[in-house]
Structures are given as C-alpha cells and as structure tokens.
Image 1 (cartoon, rainbow, N blue to C red):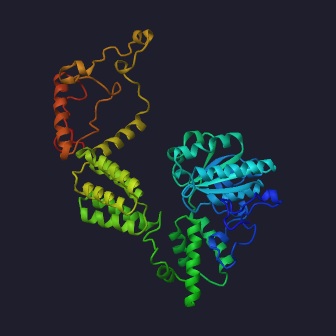
Image 2: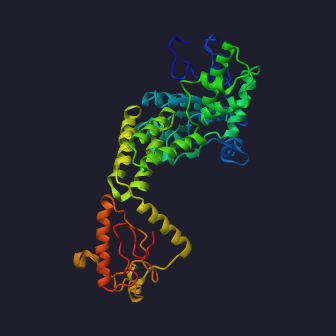
Image 3: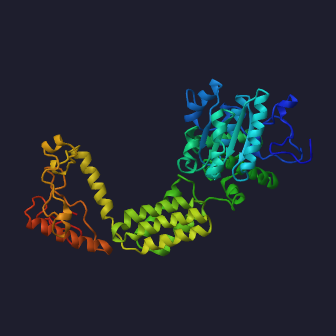
Length: 477
C-alpha cells in the first residue's frame, strides 16, 4: 500500500485481494494509540441495538422489513443529528453484505463521486454490490446530485443520503423520485434514558450517577444520541480526575458549564422562556423582548425556531395594525438562513424590537378562530347560486351565477348590498379592526361600506357598523 491512500483508505479494491472492506468492528485502527471516541465505540452492531426509531425499525415496520427481505433499496434518511442515520447505513451494508462507500457532501465533489462510481464498477465485476452513503446530501448542488442519477437507475449503487434538512426543498425531485424517504425522530426521554444506562454499564460501570444527574445529561443531549455519549465521556473523565462518585447534578452542571443549556427542548423552562418572549413583545417592551431572546440563544435554542415564533407574533399580535411586521419577520428569517450565526442573529434582534414597538392588533387572529368555530358548528352550508361558477349551459339554466354583480362595474367598485355569505347567514362582524395603526383606517373604510349596504337595503348588515373600538353596535366584543 502506498503512503498516499485513496478515497476509500486502500489502493486496491478489497474484493480483489479476497478481503472484505473495512467497516464497523472489522479491524484494527491505523494507529492503536489514537483514542476512539465513546460514540464510535458504542455504535450499534445490529438493529436491535439501535435506540429509538421504533416507527421504522419495529416489527413489521419499513426498514425492519427491508433488512429482513435482503433486498436493499435507495433511500433518503431525514432527521436531526444523532438519530442514527450513519449507523443505519453501515448496518445496511453489513446486513446486505455490500461494499460500503461513505462520502460527505461537505468535503466531496464530482471528483469523489466519480471515484466512488469507479470503485462500484470494479466491485460489480467481482460480483459484489456497493452501498453509497452520502452524508449531508443537501449540501450538494443540483449538478452534483444529478451525477448520482444514472448509477442509481442502473442499479450500480444503492444510494443512501442523510440530511438534517427537509428533502422536499433540499434534494432534487429526480433523486427523490428514485429513493424512499424515511423520517428519523429525535430520541424521546425513554430512549435516551435507556441509551444512557447501556452506555454507562459499558463505558464506566464503576461510576454511579444519581437520578438528577442522569436527567440533566439526557436533557442537555436534547434527543441526540451522539451528544449524550460525548457528555458521558466528558463527565467520566472529570469524575475520574476529581474522584467524584457518585456523580451529582451539581457536578454535571459544573463540568459542562461551557456547553450547558439553560433549558431542555420540550422542558418546562424552555416553554417558560418562549412564553416570556412572546408576552414581552405583546406587551410592547423591547428591552424585555431582547433579554428573553438572548437568554434563549445563550441557552442553545435554534435561532430559526425563534424566527418562526417572530412570524407567529407578527400574525397573531400585530396583524393588519402594521402589515410590515410579517414582511420584516420573514426577511429576518431569510437573512439568518443566508448569514447563519452570529451575524444573522442581529436580523432576528431587529425583528424582535420592531414587533415589540409596532401597533398591536389580534383582530384577524380572533376573527379566524371565530370563523373556524362557526364552520364546525354550522356544517357545510351551500354556496349561494349567484356566487357559483357557470361554465356550462346546464349550470346557467340552473341559475348558477345568475344575478351576480361584478364589483368593478359598480360605483366605487363596490356592489352595495350584495350577499357573499351562505343563504340565511347574517354577517356577524367576525373581523372587527382595532383602533390602532392601519386597522383604524380599515375600520373607517368598513364603516363607510356598511353605510352603503344600509342605503342599499341589505338585510343582515344594516345597523351593525364597525366602530372605532372594533365592536358592532350590538355590544358584542
């Protein structure tokens, strides 16, 4: 073997030498003195050792059936970090007795793809199949993803792509159509607790952890198996160094202080801080809103999660009082996606301050909820005949569209007195603009239109103008 190994860590194809390719647990490390991370040492050797993913690996579930059939197929594994995407790909190569080639889209390009194809062609001549695993496949551009298509179609390789991003947006439609998509989920607390205990028994059987310490560590890992094992390894080293045994929650927090989350995703503190952030914006306090946003970022919250919450604030608490709010919220999310951390976080901060300072209205939010409740109670009411489309002669003869008044042909482009709700439903004034921001102007316009309706003698609307307080004159709130 030369001093300059090729892409696969070997100069010649292993099958040509009568050997099987290196894989998990297949041989010695190139340098025995290099420590192997705990996460790698604990990598599952069989499906039964994989934590979580029961919806894919349980009896009768898709991936379990694929393994049992012995027939590999191309697939996209989509899920957050540490959920077993790489492990499953390696287990498939082992289970199907296939050569395993792993590429990372971060470091690879068309050159590496061509080398992988050449390797697969050499393997096929020797009667072996190749499983090609591409980690972070979403980082490949369209041309790079297209390069796999002919070889997947020919069956030269079984393609397995791993991604943390939605493949509907990040993977080419052509490649998606040739591969099944499986969604992997972050490990739930039960799976994390089981994985913690199994790892502790294997890696540090003489080290005890109290229940609070275990809960803190599984909470910090946030459903990420790899991160949990890295945390166990860090705490083990610290405990052995200091003689701490059993390990307590206080010791865990001291040991992991630099990486400590201030809340666990899905935990009470997490939702408390989200609530504080949203209520600070709703209460028009920009300082408090910034404080809670930064607390969440400092604690490890996904900035784009905060971005999605800002979009919700724009639609729920500001609405049409200032329509710019939604545009600013979406632009802030787009800016963060383009810039990443930390630069993109400033765009989110600007959006938070704007939301806190903007005029507030929940009128659309309340109207939307009221209409949804009305529909559930009233059922499927028929569309009035004059509002129905009439593309055929029969429909016209049945009265479809008869009597409809085209608004643009009416004075001021408004068909005063026209009825748009189902027959028998009087307009209840679901949407009642707030007397703030642009909605104050909207309220003035709607009041004017209601007066035109009253003059036209329209029933159901007459006598219920929208007031400056956003209420109809029947006293409803």
